[in-house]
Amino acid sequence: MSNRSKKIFLILSVAVPFLLYCMYYYGMMIKNAPYKFSEFESLKFEFGYNDSLLNKYNSATGEYQFVNRRDSVVKMNMKLTKDDLLYLHRKAAELGFWDFPANELKTDSNERSPRYLMEFKYKRKTKKVVFDAAYSGNEKLVDANQRLIKEIQKVLTEAEARTKK
Image (cartoon, rainbow, N blue to C red; front, side, top):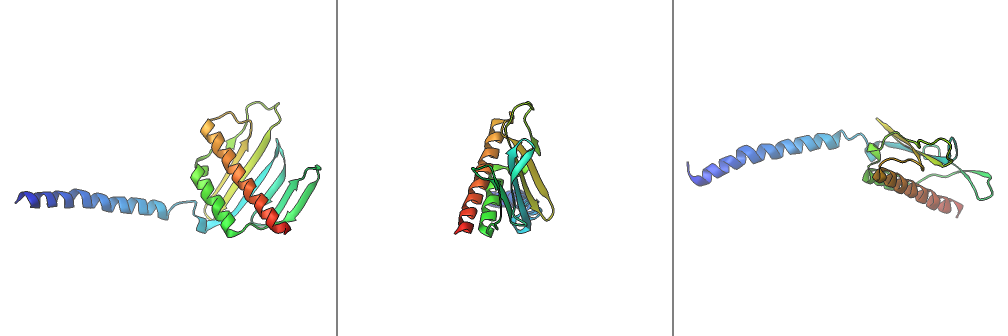
């Protein structure tokens, strides 16, 4: 065997099986990913102080309830577009929402602070996170939660403005 044929044999016997295995492994991971937008059903977002979550949005029904500046509860029906939901799905994936713990609550029960409930519902799985603004956990986790909450609120505000026009 020549030197060149030895190198070709080595490449074919090591690199090709490795590449095939990688394609198979990652292909199965992508195929079986639990949170695909094609399986997305609804988004539920609620927030308020402690246990009174008066501000609510449910994308399945379009029900939107919020407390305005005069402390009165306003109810309206507002649908998010598919682009809005895709944007929120991607933002949640980017921020690692699927890896957030389910309960991120504060340890001091005397303090009054905002509480948020975010739920992304898919055909095969549902991810629900309860986040308290006074949560004293990992700083990166708190920051990711706050960024996702701001994005959801921004999309809801834009959709409300579109609805009122």
